[in-house]
Image 1 (tube, rainbow, N blue to C red):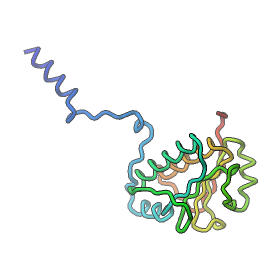
Image 2 (cartoon, rainbow, N blue to C red):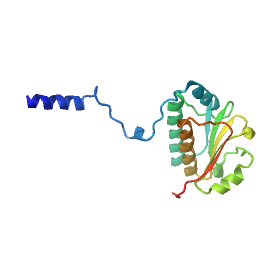
Image 3 (cartoon, rainbow, N blue to C red):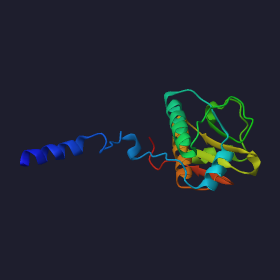
Length: 170
């Protein structure tokens, strides 16, 4: 009798239909679709396309995270564009800027946030554009995580002006 109970317990605990393991990644980075239909529509209208500039291992990690995050949160496949035609999220390192004009006041703000700082911006000066601009590639990565967190916590993307840097330098 005791042996059959142990077998049943083992079967229940290790059966794929009864248990679902996390892979570790989703334990702290969950990009589940926004459940508020109105908010989801506003986010999708604000981010019709993504332009991401730069090449490095850190930039590649930031791109991958942004694609995973936005795809999950917005419930659609996210593609990168080469040229801005719609409401766009534009992401780049200002020191390796590919010729994108900086919105008013951004240069001064970038100086104030230091090497690993970033700016997330959407104001009347930038038309229908959202920006994540940083001084370094690691700053771009920090900015991407902050932007995704903002969407996860259902915060507005309108008239947005965040200038931040990590308290502890990498």
